[in-house]
Amino acid sequence: MKKIFIAVAFMTLIGNLKSQSITDTLIIDEVVVTGMRVEVARKNLPMNVSVISQEQIDEIQESAVLTMVSRRIPSLFVNERGVTGFGRVGSSSAGNISVRGVGGNPNSQVLVLVDGHPQYMGIFGHPLPNNYVSSDLQRVEIVRGPASILYGSNAMGGVLNFITKEQKEDGVSGSMRLGMGSYNTQKLMTNTGFKKGKFDFFISYNHDETDGHRDNMDFRIDNSFAKAGYKINENLKLTADFNIADMKGLDPGMVDSADELFVANMIRGKTSVSLMNSYEKIEGGVFAFMNFGDHDFSDGWKSNDENYGVSFYEGLKLIKGNLITVGFDHKSYGGRGNIAFPPTNANKWLSVTETGAYLIAQQNLFDNRIILTAGGRYENHSLFGSQFIPQTGVSINLIDNMSIKASYSGGYRSPTIMELYLFAPNPKLLPEESNNIEAGIANTFLNGKLKTELTVYNVKGSNLIVMDYSNAPPPSRKNAGEFNHKGVELEAYYNPGKVLSFDFTYSYLNMENPKLAAPEHQLFTGFNYNLNKLSFAIQGNFIGGLYTSTSSEVLNQEIKEDYLLLNASVKYNLASNVELFVSGKNLLNTDYQIDYGYIMPGINFMSGVGIRF
Image (cartoon, rainbow, N blue to C red):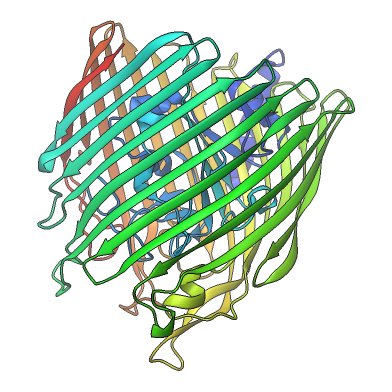
């Protein structure tokens, strides 16, 4: 790893000597919102924020965005079991997100946002993996590392912010994509946008279904999303949205096991309303949100839950070179389940509240050559009382096309309702905590055609919630676990012109203790070729040192998996607004598992048509 770091650093410095005049580059000067809540140039943030653009989202022929995010973003991994859909929910499901080895199982340590609004379930505390579809999205921003200072609990490992589309130009526009593929897989994605004067509207509908690559692995989802905005004046805009998803997933259990067929019926929804302001010296907003769901599982579990809250934040640019972000948020989440251990908590509505206030100050020095950032969050939990979460960092831009960063950030996660009251419960649990130190260097050279970014990090955690079998049965949970993860992340993008482009990402993760859904090596490489009406894309994805079982799991043994996947797609523009596409996954027919006992699909194909209007 030391040799890689030295080589990339040397390449970066040489590139800088060749590109002194480059001042406006995508990887350095791109504006993002997730790292500070208000718009800030990416180079001025002390931490790493990755971006997946709408162009990259539009390249894929699948509706589930988490799958693409997992392949493209170093140190971020999402487990899968089938050809489409993540199926059931809970700690034993697919769709678990891990960032730098933090998260996975339980899946409540990485926070998912939609337009800045939290998206975790009221009872289990994890996000809703099937609800994030490509047709709704303008871009995705990812913070690899704790962001609890801004977003509170569940941002201990990192943040994914799915930013939805809105109609920009007057008139009507839209698109539709219809695809059919292996295992009787069918996908329909359609959306329409409308804008007239101060009013804009966007609506989408997605339908996915498949018979699955194994018997009794059917999956179906219908997902609808609507968003409306009204620009009150040049400085104020009111926005409201609503999403509802109805899904059914079958899980046959592990191969060659005696598990009974598991059937999950779920309805998940969200709604929010926000008032955003943007003035010369003040930028921010206030919003209210609510997530809700109903679940009916074949093992007898029935539940409904809610997660709602309000948030306010403002970015103040009152002094030249200074940005102060202040914010306040209040969340209440909980639910009711018909099964609990102990049974006395069954059918009771159980809930907790969290209230936080934060301040982050950013000071630009020497004509934006050095940017200092520091701040903290004061958090109060209805059960655990108060705690303070700090963050500090620096970004150095002494040369126009190079950015050097270093930061320290704290993170935490409050126990979920399930961990406190329902299954193997312990109402005396304390919040988990993490501390992340990272440093990185980003550069562009070859006249802005080649962009590289290198990050090294060390993240430590304490108070982790683990299962305690010492007095079983029944088992309980306790605060006992610790971790110490170190790693390297490398990103490189080469775009010599409109015809060709290359992507490359690699991450190395060193863990003291084995953990599921946290591979040691992740490598992604992508090649795109465009010529007139024809475009071709090929992607390779290598995963090494992935634990599918550890000594703490049911099998009581460590099992590792290494695999290489090759995917490709071809698109042909039949007309200016009509394209035909064919895509193939796992073209090497690799035999692999991500979750132990769940063999992944072999070669599979999808073909269809896309229409824009």
